[in-house]
Image (cartoon, rainbow, N blue to C red):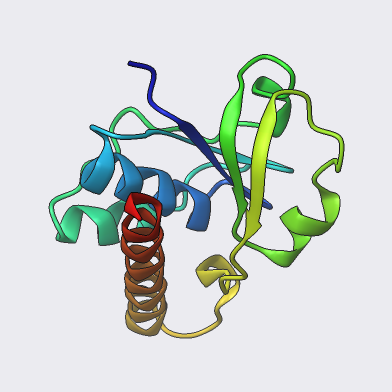
Length: 142
């Protein structure tokens, strides 16, 4: 049986969409194929990897990808934008796209503070995304 594919899209694919991809793979990888991409991809932020490793989720095979890597090449059952910029800049006509959802999540990369404060912000965003993923997966089960 083919699993529904889910694409998480954000501006840089450096934090939020990467965290969402890792969580969906971790909590429901038996039911969904998780992907992520960015409108203007950058390297994965080191704190993204660090906060996920803190809770036992490895991101070894994940890397920053551009939306164009998937557009028109893979059918996605769901496109979930995780920031306003991605929601605004994502093409409205997207070949092979099923349902489109928008979760507006703060970008921890843009947070200004000490290293410890930045780490705390990444943890806060990680937990927000975890709750969104778990709630969404539960809703899909009916």
